[in-house]
Image 1 (cartoon, rainbow, N blue to C red):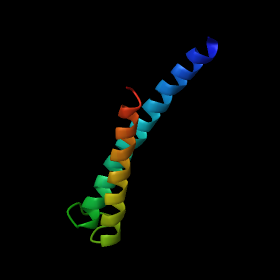
Image 2 (cartoon, rainbow, N blue to C red):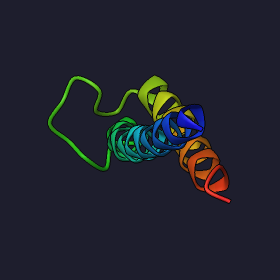
Image 3 (cartoon, rainbow, N blue to C red):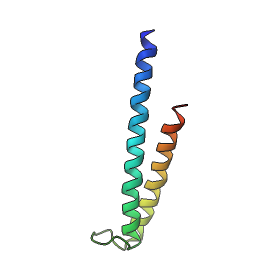
Image 4 (tube, rainbow, N blue to C red):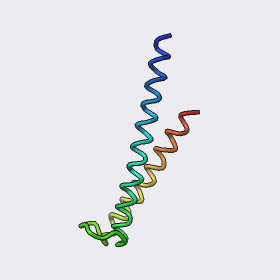
Length: 74
């Protein structure tokens, strides 16, 4: 009985952690993407297309993590 209580609380903390990490990846990836395509100036990444690619990958990974976290709740 105690194992199910612990596994439930661990599951909740894992979902919260995945959600936070996913949102952070989406935000950071969006910044990298905008800097890479020269919309958000002020960094060494500005105008560098490799950062646009890295940002796109980070956004997709963040969406995947948040989707996985939401899916695990059901």
